[in-house]
Image 1 (cartoon, rainbow, N blue to C red):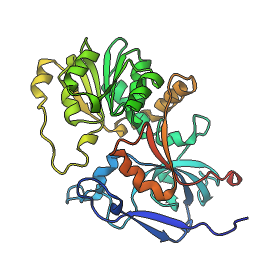
Image 2: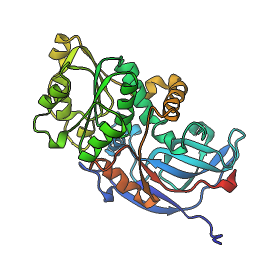
Image 3: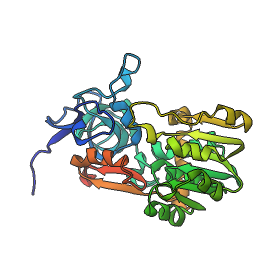
Image 4: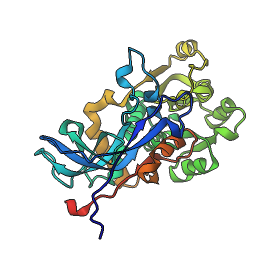
Length: 347
């Protein structure tokens, strides 16, 4: 029997990346086990989420936004599911499953206002950072509140096999829309068409003329465009929008690793001509409605109307490579790193 004390580790930002993130962007440190101070909760990381949007926080900040950037030689943070190991707070007990934005550390002590409890009865606990977390909520609100997808409309989703896109596509399908998903491999197209039940998947890496491919897949034009990618894919879909189209700008992964903002289509004239609306959003715009959204998404999941997929990578030491893999198109579904086991004797 192994009674050795657990070892604690952290991953810090070693340097600001120039362009693409590499392994030497990160550094591992052995650190002491945290002390659980008065009012605090000691947690053990179980599932760590890696997301493309974190890339911007790794850049060097200027005086306007330095406070929102990761700092050199300090731990990177991301959405994490954790288990309470010890608690000096009446609201949380040992064994509880929680989630929040935590440091890339195996163990840490945090204040109660950083934690939300995870209900293991809604869905598997890892979904707190995927289907029932920020990706699922962004998909839900982006499609229904910004996109306002309605039965019979044609919806296009870029990055459709990813953590947000796969949920957004299914929300549109459940609403009774015709749904076309864009992704970058034959395996992903198979997933979109056969697992998620989309009407059509387009492999942009195998398509010479995306604008024509969208037109062929959407002969009645595009009513709702849920964009996770930006760049030239945006231009191709935008060229096919209908009058009164709604465009929800959720992410721009095509541009995250570029130093200079790329020049593309200027959309203003077309937006006027088509009486169309383009709107960016962050999921916290809808935070008052999170609980209702989680209940609806979990109901769809438990009824079998919605599926979700996790690209699960094992091991704390693999967090950096899992993050880098996002930009190489490795993942179908939500990229998550499992870094610990839930301890049943803690309950």
